[in-house]
Image (cartoon, one colour):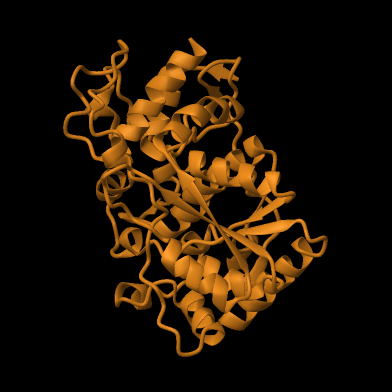
Length: 345
C-alpha cells in the first residue's frame, strides 16, 4: 500500500473517500473501504422492490434485535410499514442553542404512530460531534462525513437499548434516481467534475491534484454517465459512511435498499421531467394510500451554524484563510481533514 498524504487528502476533498485501495494516509491508518460486491436483488417495478425490501426486513427482524432509523423522508417511511408492530424507531435531532434548524422529528413521529412503532428521539449537539469524531476517523482510517457522528450516537443509543442491528433507508436515492441534481442533464467531463467535487482541492490545498480517473471510467463520446458513476463511487462512499458509523458504535448496519438494483435502464427523461425516484414513490403511494408524501429533506447537519466561528485550518498543507468563502458542509470537510492529519501525525 502506498502512503501518500497528498493523494488521499485530494481524494477525500473531491469524493469524500479514498477512491483507490492502493493508497493510505499512513500505514498506521489504513482506509476501510466499503465492499459493494455483494449480490443484489434485481428490480424492474415497485412490486419487485416491495418483495425484496419486505424479505430483507423479515429476515433481519426475526430475532427481535433490529431497530429502525426513521427520518422524515419516504425511504425510511417505506421500511417503517414493513417493520413488526411495536418495533423501535430512532430519529436524530440536531440541536443548536438559539437557532432553528431542520427538525425531522414531527414527521417521523407521525409515521411511527401510523405504523405502530415506538418512537425515540436522539438529540445531537456539537459536543457529540467533537467527542466522537476521533474514534470514527480511527476506525475508518480516513476523515469522515459529518453525518457519521449522528449515526454513531444513535447507534450507541440503540445498542444500549439492547439492539444489535440498525436498519436504514440509505442508497434508495442513488439506486433509483433520487439524485436528480446529478442526473438533470448530459454532462461534459469538466461540468460534472465541477458539479460533483465536494471541495475543489485548489480552493484549500497548497498541493492540489485533480484525481479524475473515476470520472473518466464513465466518460463516453463526450458525455459522462452520471447514473453509472454514482452507482459505483457515490454508493460506495455512502455505504462506507453508514457502515463505519455503525461498526464504531458496535451495531450492525442493515440497508435493505442497498441490497437491490435496477434490472432495467433507468428512465432519465422521467426523472428530468420532475418524477425522480419514481419506483420508490410509487411504492410509497401503495403503502400510504392517500397520505401526502413529505418533501425530501437531507439528513440534518447544521454545519453552517456549528462552524460559523471557525476561522479555518492552520496546518501548512492548507492555503491561509481558505475557509472564508466555503459553505458549512465544505468547512466541515476541511475541518475534519485537518483534524485527521493532526490525529495521525
